[in-house]
Length: 192
Image (cartoon, rainbow, N blue to C red; front, side):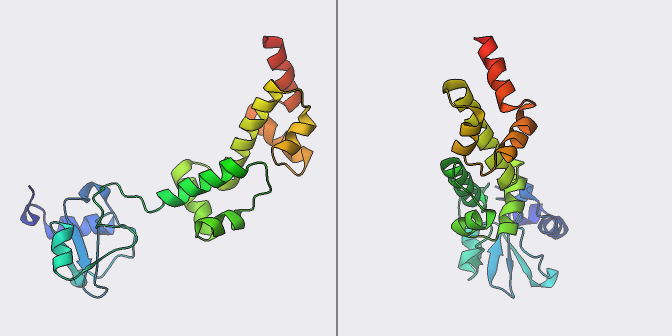
């Protein structure tokens, strides 16, 4: 088991400043002025060096009277705790189960408990898509399925998957597939 003496205070400080996840589980740090302890990877504001204490484990920090950070949850066993995972998962669930309705970013953000700006940013970082582009992706995948398995024409499909404007549906479909909905349907029928 590593000892705090095996790592220099300078290395630990650099890990805190850079929010380095490689040090998670190796040490924890506490901030005297706030009474809170964190993982080295915590994205909270960098404290003043003179207010920081280092601990080998969460139990030591708790014993010293510090509270666990609500952002990085150092009290949980998981080394890879992601405080945004529930927000991302809930957002995906809302989009995938309501893709056929008019969805506004502000409404989704309100349902998952964050601002729309924060949701837009963290969703893009974690998934590679903004919520709007993820909704478009889900809708176009559903449209492709409907065009292949039903006798609905492309206008009916566009409305069924939640588009309020058929031109928006056509533009999104072409952007995602390189084909218009009818070209996609025709190409698929030729393959049969």
